[in-house]
Amino acid sequence: MITVVMAIALLALVVAGGVNYMHPDLGVRTRMTEQIVTDYRVIESAIATYRIANRGARPTPSSLDATPPSETWKAELEDFLPAGATLDRQGFRWAYLADETGKRSLCLESPAAASHVLHDAATAAVSKLEEGRATIAADCAGTAYSSSAGDAFAIVFKLN
Image (cartoon, rainbow, N blue to C red; front, side, top):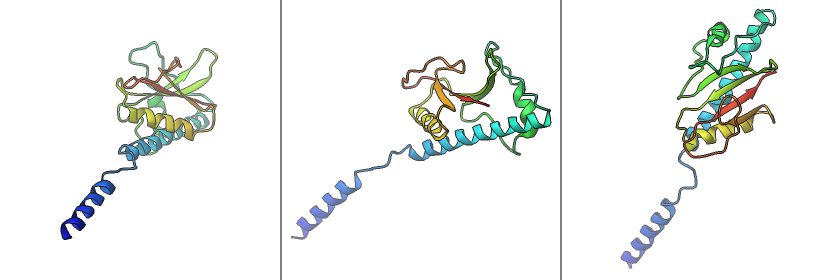
């Protein structure tokens, strides 16, 4: 009898303990999503403050033709960022761009080999912003993106 009770208890423990309903990457993905959105808002605010201080002038945009792209804009915004703010983290790289019509955007490029967790965090970050504010692309030029595991990607944020 005791053996039967112990066997049932052990079986219940294995069945109940062996099921995990939370994805193990959820915490990392959530933290990365919040960091992407926060960094975007910090940079957007720094650009607005820069423009006020410089009578409407905008920071110097990156050139996608240069390798590596120009990062003059980061130096120009340095005094307008919160103390201790860092723009590039976890292999991601920010770029400030202007298209041929003068429309400005921010672009966050992923590392060359982006994991599914990074892609999921980027997708969640885009969904947290108002509709049409950001899109996921293959690169900062806005090339159409088709999701493949391990592919690099970029999030292109439209600026006003």
